[in-house]
Length: 380
Image 1: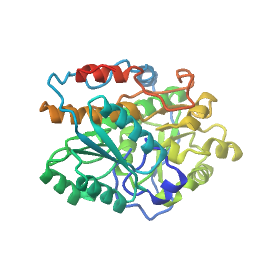
Image 2 (image 1 turned 180 degrees about the vertical axis):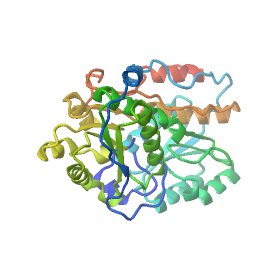
Image 3 (image 1 turned 90 degrees about the vertical axis):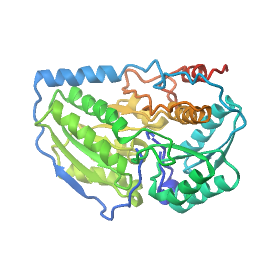
């Protein structure tokens, strides 16, 4: 999931960060703090369902050892391709530009990153610029087909390949590859719900904090709720929406809700680095010390809070696997072999399995690069 800077929070329209990441775009809601569902009193789950949650949590906590793409390309990959990445303008998108550049260089391709502020107009202009400057392929994250319909039609007519991630749209009709889809993101909800129920021993009452501008986050919330209630049918579950213009006020909105719903003891963040900055401190200042936090996405600040026990569990957005997967899809396209629609690597982190060097972003699969190079018939 992408890290949202203050500037990007003001301008964000069709892109955000993941990771992971959630990421399709819809119109921003007008309500400042809407809620749905009810915060019923948390009930005790049966021993068997709690055990199931504990087993899922243990499964998710194992660091992935393999990338999700498994089939060697097996044919020559044409060199000399020009790849353009239309960035969303955040620091994490800049990081993605560097990862994509490194991946493409292994294939003898050149890359260019077009910076935008994430607004629809600038993303559309970036796509148009990529087409005008002779791109062979374009990558954009977290954009809907409708938002780039004109540019996508032009790309298809010119034979320009288009891939991306984190969209609610299905592939096809000029859209070759999409990863971190709503269906694939259900695994995130499974891991986070298991972490809550396992920690609470079935006595949980959870608030899901959504950003309604990104429709894929709503589907993540539904997946989390489904697994959560399967583990603990009597556990309470509620949801509030935080519109984009109020992201900076998210901790205050969450604290306000918790004060009026004192039975809630867990908060699940749809995008940790967008909603959770300052939240542990805000909870402490409000005397809400029994409320625990889980979330999707992470940055070094969230990792530090995880290490200190201020956050219970995180599922980071794995930029490294996602970016190499998108380049892999393009390599398969240009080599004339089928594209594998693969999910990102998923890893449930707690303070017990957090890597020691958490001051910077890290891949879920340590040797991901060598594994991709093997599939491509390349060496480092």
